[in-house]
Image (cartoon, rainbow, N blue to C red; front, side):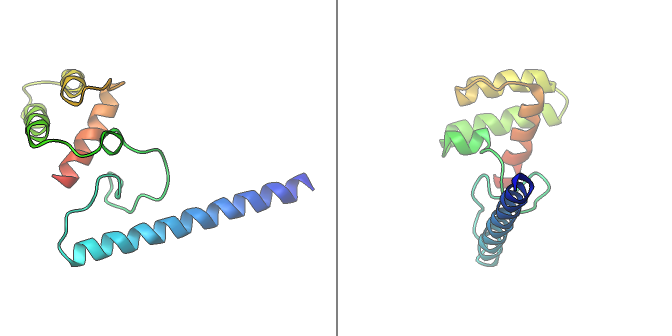
Length: 118
C-alpha cells in the first residue's frame, strides 16, 4: 500500500511539473512572438522554460531601479573584463541589492540571469 501511495505522489508531482513547464513554455513563446521582454525567473540559465525550483534572488527582490540595474551591469562588466573576480562580484552584488549573496556561485547565477533579461 505504501509503495502504491508513493508511486501516486510521484506521478502527481511529475504531471504537475510537466503542466507548469508547458504553461511557462507557452508564456515564453507568446512573449517572444510579441517581441516582449521576458520576466525574471521564467527561464533557466540554459534558456529553457523554468518549471520548478526556488525563486531566484532577483525574482525575490522584485523590480530593480534603473540606478541599481546600471550598478549591477557595471559590476558584471568589471567581472567579465577581468577587473574583479567572482568573490569580489559577490560582495558588490550584496551591497547593490541590499541582501546577502551567499556564495560566489550564487553571484555567477545572478549574473547569468541578469544578462538574460537586461
